[in-house]
Amino acid sequence: MRRFHNIFYDRGLYRSRKGIIMGVCRGVGDYFNFSVFWIRVILIILFLISGFWPVVVLYFVAGFVMKPEPIIRPQQHYEEELYGGYARTRRPASDYIKRRQQTLERRIRNLENTVTSKEYDWDQRMRA
Image (cartoon, rainbow, N blue to C red; front, top):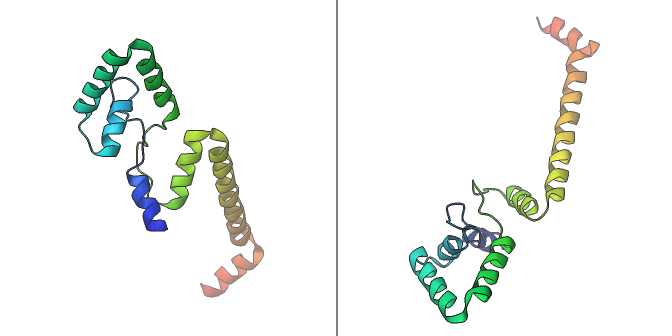
């Protein structure tokens, strides 16, 4: 299951950050491993055959529905969840960051309590 998830994630359908207009054509080309030039040619042919509005509306709907390509591909499962949550809504990502910050704060507080306690000072004097 984990291996399949990584393969799917590596080839996920995203809007490209290097595209001309919203990156939809380049994102589709990257996903299907197809030349972006031919994707654009097909889009222009569909544009001429079907008329202006259907293709433009579908293009912009796809542009708003597709998540933007991550700047740096996540390597760990929790990074994937964080990016996926952030791309959909900011709430899960901010909750994750708050939990992480609280955990680190608690660990630092425990470390400070240990180092500043009288027992720690006494142990340090005995070892010297």
